Image 1: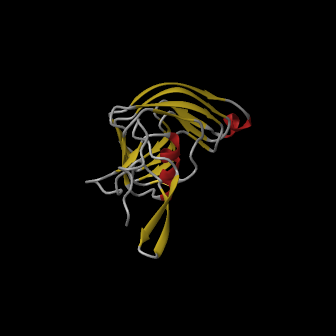
Image 2: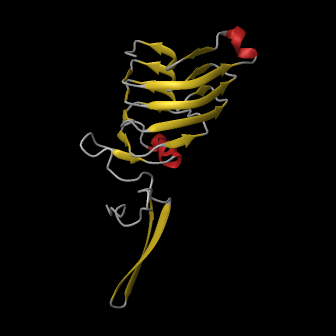
Image 3: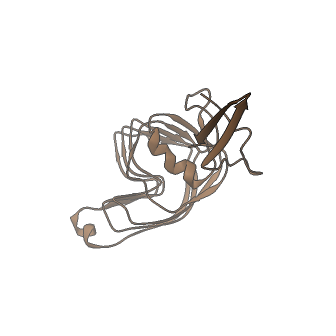
Length: 178
């Protein structure tokens, strides 16, 4: 595969969504349309996908079982709905949350056998549905370590009397290390 991330980053190292390249050799012309989901990497433990902005973070849903390394601070404005099963290292960078709603109101909505470490979050999570947390809404058999939270978490609405759950790091943790 063609790795062009080193050539298409802005001054902050953030790669844009897609690029079109035109390659010409003699009379032959080839148009290459490359979509970049992350700021670099290949998703392995040795070369994790790099996350430098909210768009990269949202694209984790494309490869939820891969390894990730956060390379810049950024803001998240939407809760995720997929199940994350990979490894995410926040690398000491900050995530500012401004999340309103969602069944799993958290950056990592739901995890299963995931490893999340060194994530630092601040901001607000306003939840009106079932599970809410500053890092994970619903964590199943996951390890969440070395994380910090200064998030204001607000639960409201009809689901409070139906068993909605909220927590500082995870709204609900089942068989986890937190």
